[in-house]
Image 1 (spheres, rainbow, N blue to C red):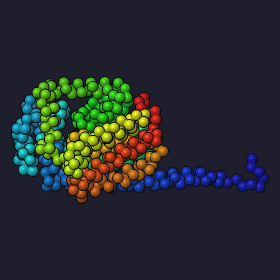
Image 2 (cartoon, rainbow, N blue to C red):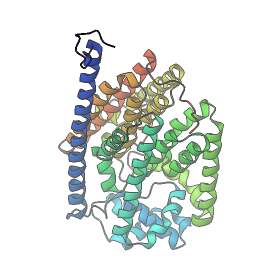
Image 3 (cartoon, rainbow, N blue to C red):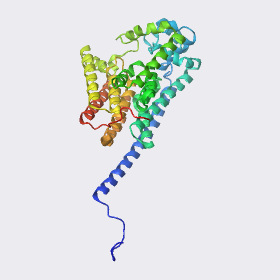
Image 4 (cartoon, helix red, strand yellow):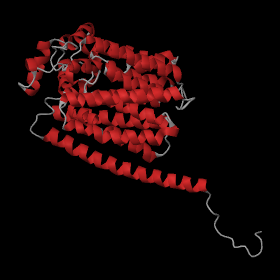
Length: 416
């Protein structure tokens, strides 16, 4: 009972509770602002992509997906034995879209693995524009799903926050450009995000499926292997074995033999469609600076050393994945604008890995989003510098987080 004569009223807020309330209100206000920005970004991205795809640019006919469709038709015609023959690809491409004078040598080559040709073979039975739309939407859906799973695994319980993360990944400038190109990067990056968000053998299944684009997964696979995640590694190996068997049956054993030499050829400076100065890796930086291959080698080795140091300093699955995803586009020999989709996932995982710094890191990441859209008005070299620098800086942030021990612990292999 209160003393006689004392009025009973609401408790006076303490300074600590007042500050907590203010922080909570500021957080809600910030989330609303980010939500409004994400919605505007989504609308702008859809309008931009639609204008390009439906405009007079023959965007679908000049897209990367067009080469996948050509490969699909080669397989459906029973000519898989010549999948990596320039004459075979050029003939199928001319039959599909006619002569395209903008392509050096008269054709845009198919450079993906032979099992990817088997995977997309059913799409070859559809008209080009329809199969482009279906394949691209599939990639966007898997990327959104992977983002949702990865953030859920990281402990983000609020559905609205996870939805915002997915929207910002999908509406980033490199993602929109990858969608316009019909790039397989969307599907591969989404599968790698799923590999982070799933546990044990399911992680390996997603990792193995991501080998439809071979260059994106090796560093993350190394983390799984070094960490002794044998069920994941075994599942990935089983998927790769299935890819090889499918290729031998559906495409041709000869395609498996021809693919390694073809990969070496397409990394050449003179290969069709290869523009090293526009790449977002150390190779591109060396080319733009005109300093020769030594910078590419030294920068790549230094990047891998930083990744190794991060892995040694942190037990966090998400920080380890962030390091792998951020480093991959920097060191692979062929990394164009659309490979930044994997970098964006690395940034998201870096934010997720440090709960006590999440608000500050999220603010920086969100502010980077509109900065990347300036790539629309920059020339190809300047935009390459922008993306390369962003990936390098965020890898440094991850190294700093690992060094100060702020990342989540005990999440190396959760049971989910």
